[in-house]
Image (tube, rainbow, N blue to C red; front, side, top):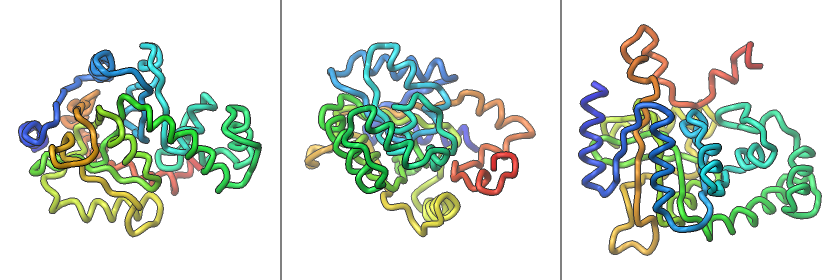
Length: 262
């Protein structure tokens, strides 16, 4: 019943103030983002960790359009400044040592060379705070979307998604169409499943339920919120023998036991 849920989600999200966009493929999704950026104020684009934006190669498109984009997840930030690729969907720099990260931060002028993880995190925090302060647009993925509430759910451990989606005046969420849940009543089991399977936690540190733009009685938050419903082959998979792969919640547990990956 995905098609019916998508239409219901569009109605309910629109009531909450979301601008809902439909993207048939990666090119359409990139064009939607670039059109929004063309009308946005000056300033960097800050991004939370998102497999959907990796899928559509969004960063390259934004940079080609002349805008600066900053990955704000610590691992994704390291990948970006090293012109590398993430090696794991949960822990993107599992292939790097702290010596390599220290070398990268020193090269980029983030601070004196160190291999201490706490000091490296502090250097990244100081650098990224300036990006959050001046950001024009924040981009995130979507872990789950709640049809009945017209809301999106983000889970993270660092807090960068919270800053990416509340500090800038515009928030864009990019969501694969398979990420729908009928309502918030269905959410707890998935939150436990995701955190436990991904990192062995009972719960992630931050769980965000975002219900559209800032309300008149709220002190902060974006003035505009956009959600892009990304197909990019998912409808075709839904009507094939491989439809069960759309159950994937990107927890990474398969990589932890996969002999080929290991």
